[in-house]
Amino acid sequence: MKVQVCIIGGGPSGLLLSQLLHLQGIDTIVLEKHSRDYVLSRIRAGVLEHGFAALMREAQCGERMDREGEIHEGFYIAHDDVMDRVDLNKYSGGSSVVVYGQTELTRDLYEARDKMKGNVVHNVADAAPHDLKSDAPYVTYRDGDRLVRIDCDYVIGADGFHGVSRTSIPKDVLREYERLYPFGWLGVLSRTKPVSPELIYSKHERGFALCSLRSQTLSRYYIQVPLTDKLEDWPDDAFWAELKRRLPQDVAAKLVTGPSIEKSIAPLRSFVAEPMRYGRLFLAGDAAHIVPPTGARGLNSAASDIYYLYHAMVDHYKKGDDSGLEAYSQKALARVWKAQRFSWWMTTLLHRFPNNTPYDDKLQETELQYLFSSEKALGSLAENYVGLPF
Ligand SMILES: Cc1cc2nc3c(=O)[nH]c(=O)nc-3n(C[C@H](O)[C@H](O)[C@H](O)COP(=O)(O)OP(=O)(O)OC[C@H]3O[C@@H](n4cnc5c(N)ncnc54)[C@H](O)[C@@H]3O)c2cc1C
Image (cartoon, rainbow, N blue to C red; front, top):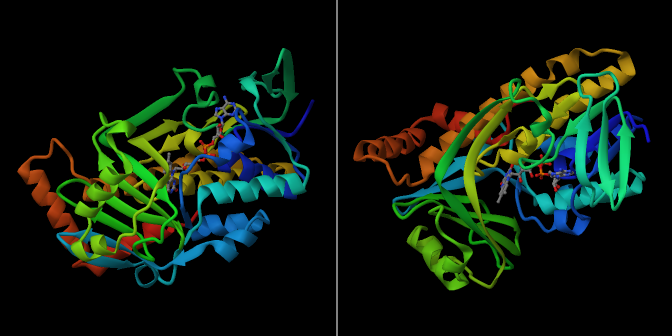
């Protein structure tokens, strides 16, 4: 089989690119390792930059997002039993974010692919890109006993952090930058009314907490936990009790608790792989970079890669102009590193670091005091949170 663009990975990055290219008459195939049900069972991101929302609309996938997603024009930072609001709208010059779950967004992308009869193959085993430095790359995978070969012009590695694409780049070409944080986030999803219509990021001496939501009936809460903690250590009652301790008293008093419908622990990690292009292979999304979830940049950084790749591919196929493809890695990485910086800053501002000295703690407190005493500092936070321009 021959296609123009072979995409490894059927997460949001791969599906969105495939949908956008198909609408421009560019032929794609998406190869996904897992079943659709499995992909749709993963509970992940929930805060979308306005630029990402615009890209979903351009992909003709924005209808439900616009109907059911919530526009948020601000969020709170809780500390020392007070709540300070960050007015995104005011400090970003009129912008906002959309709260809409990654699961729902991925469902919309799958449905759009189905509607256009897009080629999405699930349960592919042993996907492997070949001859990436030649003009005729191809990808193989196993379908039962059968080895399938897809010839293509370009391979997109959109197969997440644990995928095969990044590891296909020779070690002497790839540079990896990484920071591991000495804690993780324990997350709980519950069918309860959110404690606040807007997100609350809470800095507390017992550790960070986040009150997030997917809708007005579905809440997502997180608490910072040591990396050694296991899910068995956190029955629902223990989770709710600890979350309440880390919130201002009046917020804790309002918290509606209920059975968890999903519970997981995610380690916090910052990671970037450079370059994001090797011959005819282009990496996108978590395959090339990940951030701690503080600041909600992960999925949004994936979206900016897709924006650059989409335009570069259209210029290549429609105008014979390869400048976008040539500049892709450099352009994408420039924005990726800004998202890394912002995520690192938010994480450092709000978490309890076990090895901090009293001096470090004082600096952290001062950073927060400075933030809420300076409109310029709030402006910087707001412009990063709503999303820097593509
Ligand atoms: C707990 C948690 C909370 C998060 N919260 C936020 C948030 O609030 N805001 C935010 O912006 N981001 C958040 N993120 C990050 C966000 O979920 C990711 O950045 C996003 O999923 C990246 O999309 P992707 O398509 O690049 O990668 P993925 O979603 O990882 O998709 C990659 C796909 O490739 C498939 N695959 C893997 N290997 C292979 C292979 N060998 N062959 C074929 N297919 C393969 C996988 O099954 C998967 O479906 C969060 C992440 C986690 C884990």
